[in-house]
Structures are given as C-alpha cells and as structure tokens.
Image (cartoon, rainbow, N blue to C red; front, top):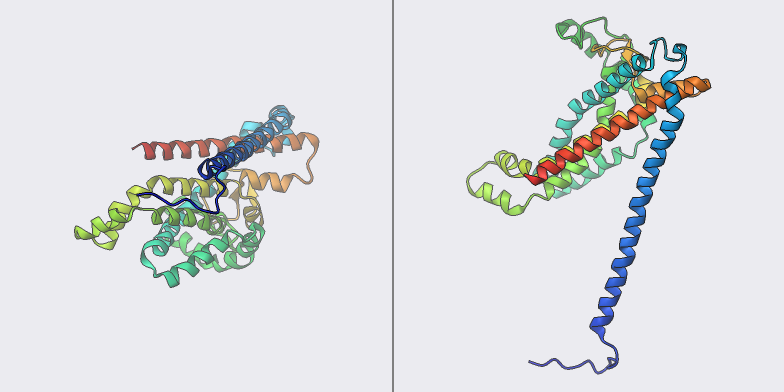
Length: 318
C-alpha cells in the first residue's frame, strides 16, 4: 500500500527530520532548565547552611547567661528539640488518621459531585496563614477546650500527659497540637489522595471479583500500593509541624523545660517559637545562640527528610 504525497509539501524538506530536530531541541532546553533549577535549589540550601554555621557556631560557647538560665548550649537546645518533636508527634497523632480517612473518602467512597468540592475545601486550608490559625487557636479553640482539659485531668490523671492542674484559659500544648494538626492535614490529605487514586484499577477490580468487601479491597490492594506515598505524606506533614512558629507562639506561654504534661499553663517551648520570641530584643551573643538553635533545627529537619527518603526508597524496592 502506497501513501500519496502531500501536493502542498516542499519536496526539499524532510518533515520527519524537522520534527525530530524540534523535539531534540525542546529536550535540550527543558533539560537545561531542570538542571539550572535543581542547581539553584542546592546552592540556596548550601548558602543557608553556611550562613547558619558561620553565624551560629559562636553561640555554642558564649557566656552562660545567654542560655536562658540553662547553663550551656546543650542544656538549652535539648529541651527545645524535645518540645519541637513532641508537639509535631502530637499533631501527627491527630492529623494522620483524619487525613487518610478523608483521602479515602474522596478517592474511593464519595461520588464525584461530593468528592470534588470536599477536595477543594481541604486544599484551601493550606492557603490559610499560620497567624490566622494561631489567632483561632488562642481566641476560639482554647476557651472551647477548657472543659475538655478539666475532664481529662479528672478522669485520665493516671497518664502523665494529664496529671496536673489544667489550664484555665485553654492555651496549652494540647490546643496547639490540634491547631498544628489542622495545619498539616491538607498536605497529608492531598498527597494520600493522589497516591490512592493511582492504585491500578485492575488490582481493585480483582480484589472485588474475589469477594472482598470495599474495606478489604482498600486494605489489601490500595494500602500496600500506596505505602511509600503515605510515608512521604506523613514526613512532609512532620516537616511542616517541626518548623511552625507563629501558631505555637500565639497559643502557649512556653518555658524551656522537658515535660509530658500537655494541658497545663507551663508548656515546653519549641525551637521555632523560641527564636521568634527572642529574636527582636536579642544582643549579639544572644543572637548567635538563637542562630545556633536554628542550625540544630535545620540539621534535624534535614535528617528527618533523609530518613523519609530512605523509607520511601526501601518501600519502592520491595
């Protein structure tokens, strides 16, 4: 079978070669842009690390009066790092079950006319400034949770988290953790939703054809396929919670201490909140201490993200 030549085509021009050349040029340009963008990101990251190192290293050995009464930099940074991780873990405990449930509802249970607006609303939560969440937590959520704090203190005092005098205004680490959970919920939900939606349709149909219920199909077909993506979503949410500043600073009245009690007036202080509250009126030595604590937070966040990448890579390899 022969194909008639296009009478309007120029016989001296090879159309196939021309398209191939354009495609090659496009690939080269795109690759160059991608390489430049990746290089700029690495340069910016290295510049931040170098700045924190140069400005923060003197903070490791200044006079002990600049360590907020803790005597040494290690005595200051250990409680701050503990509080940072403690608040983030509490937020994850609240946010992860809700995020996974909402993502499953949108991707596998809700009809499209309901799933689409629900997904839009969840995504819009990520656009709300943290100062708005902090104001909401301090003015609205905190007073609303005062009876809950009293109930927890009366009925669950055998747990160290609730063993003590509850706060009278609700501005506690418990409230701050709920606010943090609301803030990281759209990140975890959106990633989990996309991962769940990418589960091969044949796997889901095969599970249903074998007699599995909808939940069994999700449990044995969707979750195994989406495990690495779920871990990535949780780690991204953890990174957001670790670096959050204004919401915690506006809700709680923190102190540099290590405590499991989360419904009292004395709350452990996170690194980000400590820097935000002490930066404005700091002396040069005190400023170097704050930058040094920022360096510790930077390194810790980097290690958390590296651990997440390792877990994801290991899951993909399996």
